[in-house]
Structures are given as structure tokens and as C-alpha cells.
Length: 535
Image (cartoon, rainbow, N blue to C red; front, side, top):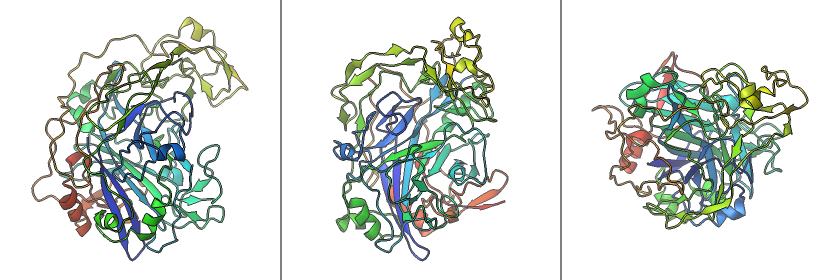
């Protein structure tokens, strides 16, 4: 897999940013040290950043990481987001292959060229953007405007949606999310991991930090994840939902619940120097910033960690890891209590080659969870009728919890949770279908400042390999505009949150996009395009 990391700087009259290639997710597991510290998380995330990503972590620990998947070795921050799966007609799932682009920017919609305007993240700063329980869209919500999706077609017109595209996307799907960029200046976290920050005055990618409660301007993080959805075009007819066959790891077929998390792991002082001084190249080449001594750039290195949880999360699975039945559009999703906890592995090893030299062993055995009283907002899967999920008769233990309401909008004070080992899913075998022809081999391409290609190692439990890139990589038609990368800008129309399915867009030829292609020889599944949208 290939990834690009972009950090940008701009004001109205000047723009600068830097681009980097990211080789791989460091891991794909049920880990979330922000929302579920110290325990197995409710759903699967893919992770970028420092190798000290653990069930619990902080800035000091991340700074001690042996390596980082981000080519600037001084950035050992943790960035993570839910993984995407294809749902087969029999209710099982196959993971998608993905790649990521990340942009960090500020003031107005990027960070200012004027030193001192933007404040680097303080130690132990962390935040969350998005809400995994959402299954409807509010166009007036800045938080929901922060999430958009592009249905990519490198040979034609790419279309923007506020939900997972309900059509086949020839060049894949790009999920996009902005983080808030205004801070209260006091708290590095809050109970909901959101209340200490706010979006810009005009939305996630434009305006100022004019709210007196959030006066401090932070670097704005914008993450793009490219999913190779076209790998499944040949078997789309075998999907549970042939119109939109993809489901996020927390049971979301809409994309409205898309979210991402961040914990600061930058080396002390480095990010502040960068946002104050790295304005030397308008096309994103980080070489001049490296030459200024602002940060270093690792080339030809990868970074991964061995599994912390003894659980298969990629390949073809009978159900989504955890207790995450698919919950459709229409009402807020219910958070299900886990019916079991997989074993924890230790120690966790960082490695930079094709495979680790050692893996952890079981340190904490797995267990089947017991019945516990808990607030009604967390119930068992049998308490909710989930459209689009495999149907099954409730177990005898689940039937004993009939007092739990099927309408989760009416909440009693408490409810007893009865955990079924089937979690509401029928017993069935792996689908006997033809999975798209794929290969684990990454094409040999020379990418400046991009980590070397390598194949992820199997987990300690020898899980099935995830779907990977198609044997034939899509190439733009002759004469087509080669992509660019300023996807954070309001002018690009990529993150404004306005659905453009009924409109059209055209590629904007610019020095920026030409430079990105010339400097980075981008692979098709991470190619950037600037678009101008019309409705």
C-alpha cells in the first residue's frame, strides 16, 4: 500500500504545504486509547503514526516510539479511523484495502504564514471528530459537514457525497474528515473528547476562531482515506446491498457515523517551528523545509506493530469484530455491549521490515462477558431489529431480556444485558464466492520521501490476508488531467459537506497538481485531483 501525508500552510494571499508518502497502517485492530482506554474497543480501527500506539497512550509514550509510519520521524502522533468492509449477501464481510492522505492546516482554512498565528498542539492534546452513532444527516451541523466522500473516477467525473456513494466508483472511494481547529486554550481533552475544541466560524474548512470560548487557532487536521472499492465491482451482485455494499466496522452502511481520533505525539517544539516557518514551497515539496532544519525526512522505511489483540480483523469474517450488527439509516444507532473479549497479547513489537522477528503471546486470556446492569443506551444486539443485518431467532438467554424495549428512543433507567455468543448473527460458513483477483505485490515505483513498499505480516493467529490492490492498476486516460493535492482548501470543494451528486465537477489544472504528479509519481489509488463543483 502507498499513502500520502500532506501538511499545509496558507493565508488568502499565499499558500504552502508539504507532502509525504505514508507506507502503511501500523495496525488494524479494536484499539481506541481515546474512547476506550485500557480495554478492547467496540470496533476496528486502522492506525497511522508512532509505534507506541497501545490500548492506553499519551504524548510522552508516543514520543518514545521506535518508529513512525509518518515519514517525518518527529511526528509520532496517533491518528486512527474505522476500517471499511464489503458485506456479502449471506451476512459475512471482507475487509477493503486502503490508503491515507493527511493534511494539517489552520487560520482561515489553512495555517498562517505569519509566525505566532497558529499554536501547535500541547502535550497530551487529543480530540475526536465525528459520531459513530449517527445514521442521518443534518446539513446545518458543522460536525457533519466535516465528513464527506468522493466517488472517484480518474478518467471522468468524480462526485462528492455526504454519505457512502450509492453507486459503483471506478477509481475507489475517498473518505474525508476535518478535525476542529479552534481550542479553548485550557483543556487538552474533555469528557466527550470534543467540547474543548470547535470548528471554524463558517464551517470545518473556512472562517476564523472568533468564538471567545475557543480563541486559539490550532493546526487543522484533514484526513483522506482511499478505499479500493473497485476491487469488488466484479462481485457486487453478491452483496447484501448491491446499491451500496460497504459497511464501516461499527455497523454503519451510511457513512454518516464516520469519525477519526488524534493524540499528539510530535516531538517538543518541532510542529511550532514548522507552522511558523515552513512556507517555502507552494507545491508541497518538503525538501526546502528539511533543508531549513525544521524537521527530518525518512525515506524508504516502513513502520508497523505486532498485534495487541488475538482477533482476526481483516480478510473474510463471519461478522464484524465486536458486537456491531449493521444498523441502517433512519435513527441514531444503538451501542451494543460486547458479548466476549478476545485475548490480549504481549509484548508488542515494532518492526520496519516485511515481517516481525517476534510476536507477543497471550498475556490476558479471552472471556465471555457476563450479564451486568448498565444504562439503556448500551443494549444487546437482540434488543434491536437491524434492517440489512442477518436475521436470527434470539437465543433463550436473549429472550429472557424481553423487558428491553425495541424502540431505543424510549430509555428506562437501566436494563439488564444478556450476552449471546451469536450476537444476533446466524451460523453460516465463509461465502462460496469468487473474490476479486488481487495480489500482495506492490508495483515498484520510485517515490521521493515515500516509504518503501512491503507486505503486511500476518498476525500471531495467522489471520486471513486482507483484500489488496487489484492486479491491474487504473491509469488515467491519455490527456486527462493528472491529479493534485490541495484537498483542504475550500476552493477545491472537497470538504465543504455539500452533497454534489446531482451536480458536476471538472478538473482544475494547476501548477500544484502538476508538481504533485511530477514529484511523487502517485499511484492511482492515492492520486489527488482538484475539482470545481457546479450544481
